[in-house]
Image (cartoon, rainbow, N blue to C red; front, side, top):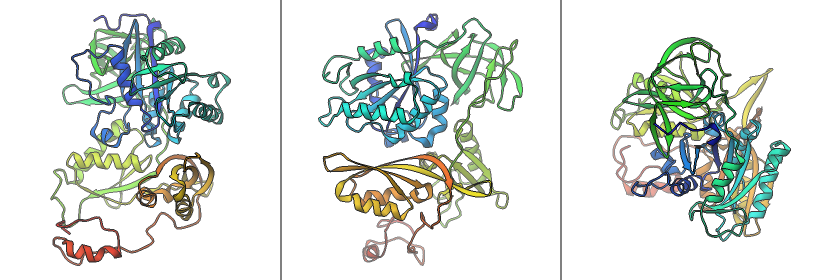
Length: 525
């Protein structure tokens, strides 16, 4: 295998940071196409980085992905980061594998709150970013404003002088060109490749020392079992080699790495050996947890374990005990639900699951936010699980006798006509306005700080209030003393059917003025 026989100086590891919809996945498609990593005959699915159905439907990235590009003599590993703080557990692990980040910003919208979260983590780790202003050919593009906003963001996040002196590239991922000037409208991605090769340093690693690496993410295959993924920090590894595994408690055990795989394009290729700086996948070690250190049996020393932010929202999962139990799902028992949640815990590090002591049929599942838990529930539903879930509640913690609750920063982008309504609705939910920027074209951007419990269930109400034209983004900010007030709860009653049967259009039509319906004609009630 010739893939990994190369100089460490020809290796570049970078992560991509971008807000939802700023074109990260499309940009990676172009880099793969133009570097020739994809052959002409290979069918390149649109948005190659979004690999599971939910990611494609929602247009979000949940799990971090790896892809690698061969450009001239350089091997560039690109790791995708999830943009949401809800998947923050993923973000922190990804950044531990790379030497620089590509911050992708929309040429009209500028940096958004979700990019802020990942950027903050990256700057804190001392990574020096390259800023890519994407969609430069949009009619509404305002690159100079975006650049100023990005600079202000870095300054607010305590960036060093070196980090503030960042490089900028203007690009269009859709049309496949990039340049150093904002007037660029044609060409290819070469300037971006050159920038990555020149500005990103090669991994600072020791190739000749004893082997050591840390597991930063896991995958599972029904053929080979658990697959560990991470960056080799020191030394070399060959296939079928004995190693020692150190878990987060410091316990050691012997194991053997069977296969070593490198990344090229979106495929994993088996290789005979890999060296420090490479991002690899390997099989043969079970059980395996994220943050485990794998090292040479002669030199056993653990790497510091990776920290992950604590969960902020909790829900109860239980066996479905409604009248329709067992009609839709294949897996309905407590044991099956427990096994599925345990399996999720292996790779979903920001999740916590506890069985309720007073009622063993119920599980308390805590995560990073509404989105984090809703994605888990939707995945389980698609796999054929059936269960009842309670409404989400925030985790209140006590510090020195003072109760604290999580607060989020919310950015709202609405038409000026709806501004009053939204400010009033968020005010009722305990939000405080921190910033307001009209864009001069009839839209306003508002920033609020709001307790998480005030935000739960607000999105649908928000879309109705703005007639579908508003955009809302939120991100966990900090814990602060509990706010007095009973917001985030229903302020009116519910309509209940008094018997079983099918709902009919005539009855629903006459009832619709009295409440919001979430059933249609012919639904069993």
